Image (cartoon, rainbow, N blue to C red; front, side, top):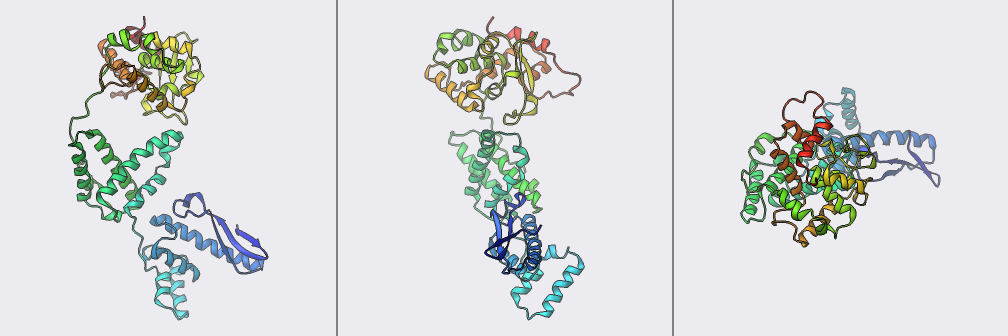
Length: 427
């Protein structure tokens, strides 16, 4: 493919930047005049230009350098002008012998200067990846984690990592990534310890940021073979402090006598009210409930149930969350009223959670400030514990990992139904 473009009789080399290199070369197209009106000559020049450009992109990819950055970029372009693809000396040494000899032969023929030698023989070493660029490179290396996520889920996945890395940069400053030290990581940890003393944050928040920073740095360092001693850098960085506490659960008595009383929830729209009822009897998360499609709601089966599955745009929190949950009590009534699911909030679980928490707070339906709508899941777990449900039954209903070897087909729908009948709220 020659990538030729003819404008007013003059041929241009014209090529769209491949998606694989867009993170390094943000241009949409590379367009260069070949200064000829001869198609035959233009084809030859375009082929040469294409080889040089592909070598340039390959080098950017190998080094992590961005197009049009630093002295390195100038050397790449200078080498191309002289008819060579640029490789810094380590890469050049790995090229075929005849290619290396050709470069020396070229320099022998011309009245070369220092800058030509630098360009042809690769004097400029591999560009060092700056810490400030690590997050951008990390996004590109993490595309596999985002394949099945919706736009909302991608945003939720990226935001805490953006926040953590921004805090890290504020704390340690920008520097070449290979120059990170154990002291930098300790300083960031100490910075968080100072914030914890204010009582405004809990250690779980700090530890999540420490882990996110570690993941970003080690992912980039490993891919670009930077030789970081990540084991030493991040050894024992987590903050051991039991300050997060456990979100309180509702008592069954409070749920029946106050929280779920129809008159107390009359101000909610039909779908929000029924989603709350479904949550209380199934323990399924709000995001799981609003992701249900009509075919996931099996009201006409011998045992009415819902099927929670992972699908594009609604991936579950972990692989263990895929499950079938029988419908009893409030949940069965809720899905009879909303047989197609909670379509008003499809793809918007945060909107529903915010609405419910706001309504329940304003109507003083939370027994303490520590309670939230998510406390219903803790209540569901407590009720399972109260009837001494088997570990496998609890795991299959809650969507938790079953810690022992996973033999057999698991808990049947009928067995789950017997468990839920024992703990159902609405009789």
